[in-house]
Image 1 (tube, rainbow, N blue to C red):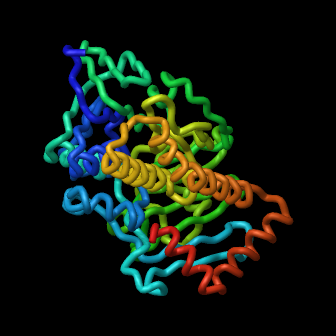
Image 2: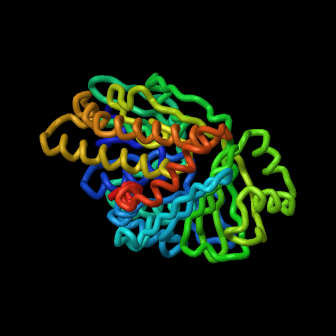
Length: 394
């Protein structure tokens, strides 16, 4: 294999999870190849906002800090949220989370995906030990007991002890390895956009549960929010096609008066929502992380944080294997990673699926149960504080 470029491992996918994983491993003296089809635009900030946003937990923030990416995000645009208000549009149920109640400065940060990706991409260029292949399209993957090889469309050939699939919900690496998934459509689409409101965000994330799905207002800047509006596919299509005035009117009707009038909206897009879970996270010399292994409903904003937790677990697994002079891609090593993450991910997917079914309906018994549950949890301070610490990843 003299005509191959050799690395310790190859990460397919340079998005938020893949780039973070590459940076962390390279900082620990692993030789990493990072494959990405298209480099992100690093010229941020720009006049407009990215309509795609992520709620970043404290645990994920610590990862970004450790690899030196957090400063690049903060220099562009990040917005902490110190409180969260959740209420049911069809009843009196409501809950208020306040970081001050657990002695924390915030509950997390809302950051545009473009900001996260730009800062991470800059770090992949700055940290020694990462070889970036971009733009690059993987063409052929060969997974064998003696090693793994990856051929790129431009003729480059790579070899490694381990391939990591961090290439999203439509994962090419997962498909090549023949790893089966199961799941179902939620018969909902998430409409995303950036809106400006009459009142400021008050460093608060807002979420209203309507019968057709949750509507979240995530603070980005003064009086500016990223919204995630989960609704029926037909309604989502209508919302994207509406003129701005009609959209803002419907948004106000669906959300209420908490933030005053809806003043402006930019571009809109809609994405189908589904639950997906891969039956096995590993194959011969292959491990999956992030959306390549699991996809979750966005109502709790945990998608990217779950993927970064996968990355953390894989890093620890590979460090331990190297310390014991074990083969990084050996089945026994990769099984330890899968055991570390699969149960936690499955629990989170199940809980979020249950919340979606509980709140996205208009059945009288379930309406009463969820309103009672919201109000009871709001009054039970120890329970509410535990929920906040869990959400922070502490």
